Length: 127
Image 1 (cartoon, rainbow, N blue to C red):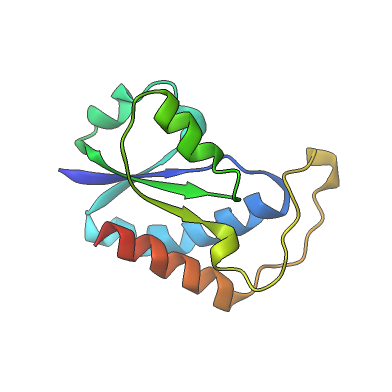
Image 2: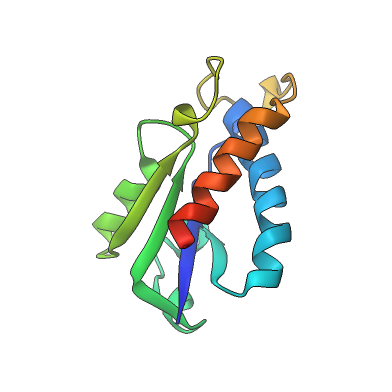
């Protein structure tokens, strides 16, 4: 069984960071076969999609865009068990703005160092 990595649906600057981090993580993940990556917006209300994909439902990794931990809350509300929860704010040196309306999407690039630290945390959570 594989671990499920369930990623927050953050938008704005946090969404840009998560996109960059998950792109790097996917390069490692595609060759490891240890996990499958999902968006909480997709599977949060339909966890059966993960279990049908061979994910161990007792080994879910929640990837949160901020300390609101929306990903955790949506998963827990729907009976999913979280093995580990990772939050962008714990790995970024500068302050990142909150989720925003899509009309405000003009953000500086996330530093490679911040992204790399975050990707390593996701890898470590998987084992």
